[in-house]
Image (tube, rainbow, N blue to C red; front, side):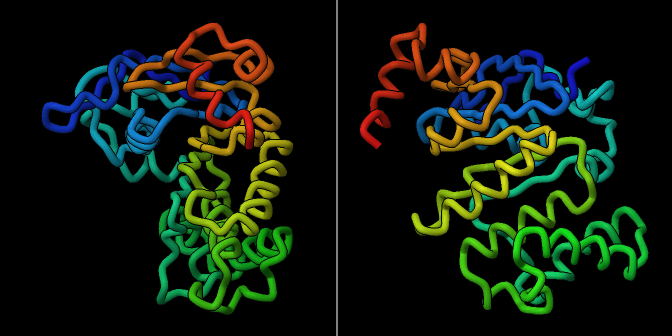
Length: 244
């Protein structure tokens, strides 16, 4: 059974069709990389999965629950999904530790001592334990993004969504964030990530999905997508990265 399934998902903003019949299955422990030009629908697709954008038609299933049903309890669904955006979105008035433990304490009812113990273990794992009592503005961009990822996985979500998480980082900070995602993937975390890091998608993803104009133009294992893509549009897109 798929952990995540999208059936013919449509989404428009006014007269602009952003998602045009997206169907996609993601299995447990699978890493799926969404690639495509800006405006191809990657971020909207991730926002739709996390119920930040209501879809116009189609269905989205998380395990055996239709989470696109209007009667669904949105907060309960979101508590099962971890999300990391481009711009960290850490609460500036909370310490790193409080950012990481907030959902565990407020949404899942974990007591503070237990939540903090688990959070400190995760922060130590990514080299951020010395900064646990610091506020986000005292951290580098790479440190903030790693803290945001730790916050997203602190509640052991069924699914982790990553939306261009390195696009706002200086190039020298990209590697430390991608190293953490690589580790999560190796641990079996189910991940759907929108990315422009083609080398990373090739090395870490189990499947690469190329979105073009709101549709899935092509998908397959990285070896096929980067080695011998079938569609001319895919070849044209990937040619832009061939010298990078």
